[in-house]
Length: 266
Image (cartoon, rainbow, N blue to C red; front, side, top):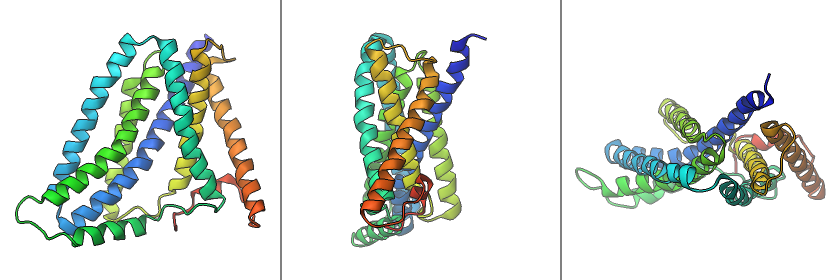
């Protein structure tokens, strides 16, 4: 069997997983805002704001993605995008490591939900369409979704062959899953292991960034795309060692990396 044929599904699986997890994290945060708006101000204007934000984000992917694929040299694109993903991923990873070690407070979606509700209740309600509900829902979905768009475009357009459509489908699937869960629970998703997801996303972004930065300067990885899971495992080991060292320094027990994903209680 051709090695390239073997490694292609592996690269696609890692890409889909990275995009799905990153999108899910951002959509959980967006859903918290939308639920607060819907419960407090009514669902009609809130859902209209969501629909417009999703439309704008989809247009950005369609407008920016294909030109990158067709007009920018792949080696240059990989070098630039790889560097961006390294910076982007290291930020996610740094926060996740600090939260897992107890040096930084975890996201408390209950507190965030309550804060949004209090702010929205302070604004008088309008009859008919609610401009406040529309604006807050639009901004929440657009700002969180913009980060997803960046990840979809960078990861999807830099793959060879281009997997922009696959990355977009993974992001759409994450939005659908989070949306369905939101409809079922009808409240903020405080039980979602957000920090574990952010740890995973950070590991994958840093791994892709390393992989593509090296390919951008014509480094040939042993095993081609199979190098990506190896990089994920390597960075995962480094993150675990950092969490362990930081916990010991703080005088706390040093659990496994999986404990980073418990429910966010602040």
